[in-house]
Length: 577
Image 1 (cartoon, rainbow, N blue to C red):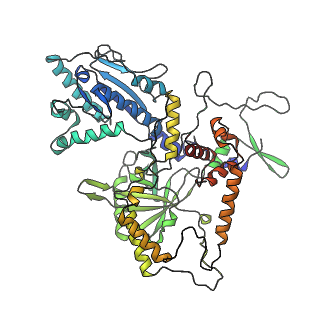
Image 2 (cartoon, rainbow, N blue to C red):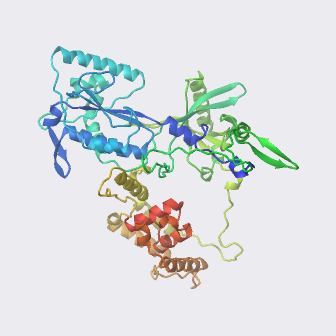
Image 3 (cartoon, helix red, strand yellow):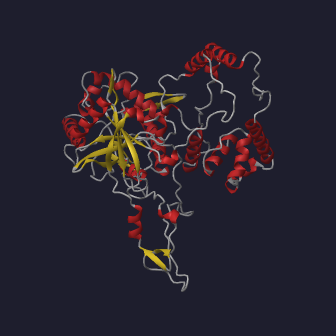
């Protein structure tokens, strides 16, 4: 088999050294939901929005169901288990009384959430056991506390979501303060904070929330014979739909793809491993799979220090992709933290950043290590100390910007002081207080996951999705904002400006406007040749080309970026399908 040059250096998604593969494997969490099923959970009620009052037990089950739905979207590789205690029946591996581990068929006790698990937990039956009193209760409390401390020593964390009765509040001090180690101010702030967590579980949005978990460990070579170990964390990653999983049409189980080679001369199945070759003069040079893997592996994946530069040499446009946060660890190389602190302090004091070679197997490149100092406010730590690893661009990634009016004797226009002040005042009106990237969800992705949820759970209606990206018309209609906008328009364009006028300074329409108008008119004309509603209802949008799909998007002033699946999803969202 002749070697394909493009395939030789193609990134493998399941390559153990691939960063995304490392992130997927290392960010897996194991979550256990513990729910009290005693009689008090069914005799007390709490408000449930616009519905009638529900028992605490049903509120807890509803929160778990909503959390599982969100978990499939956020972290599909996490594993969960649901356990009820104080139950009449028992179902657990240790055969303990009053403990019932809820599960469905074809699933382990601790496993990834499935559609069947979510459907059955929503329809769970009431099965309380009864309260335990006396010496037995005291002994069980002592045993539970000891097992909790043992679990915490193993790195297992426990979160409590308390539910109060109408006539009395939940008393954390009775038992759970010792279990969670709550004292002083932490104990006083626990109930309000837990209430916010409970409400958040009930009203979670369909967002891909990437937690700041460990991706992989990196060996940082500082000098000959001196190396330290770093832990890397992903801060921001693009939000994309989940990978496609092919399922069997009968059993609905995931399919496993296998590939076989057949000899072109004899038609027999090739038993041995395939070998590839590269023609060289009159010979075919053969390569084994192992040899090709070694050719593709540029480096061992270590980080090697090359030198230092002043911080003003690092420009904003050098950061072309999300950076990675690195922090020292002494798990394998003792003393890594001490060396890292000394290097970190020196870089901050001298205002330098480090240039290093990051030997990733798929994309080796130069990186910049920028030290970040710790920031502490009244509420605690805002920014942790550490370093940001910024992936520097290659030479061909940087383009020289073309000057405006190149080759023309006309001086480019510049804003005067009044226009600059009016623009600054307008931008201040746009300022979003306490802005966070998590405030806005991608409406197309939310719609995508809502449709998948309705299909998987066999729901009759698709959940309503709120588009958080639409303009805030109410806020933009406030007098202060309108005044700032009108002052800016008058300062830049004058009193006689008309928004619909495409004329420029010399009275003629610009060539760019003409081309844009021609493209839009052609898209509207071509879009009219298709019955888009019929194509969407019959699932035939996927049969169209990307160019044909863009006719609809251009005609309706929708974004054109993305792959074919993203374009189809955008069209369906616009059509309300």
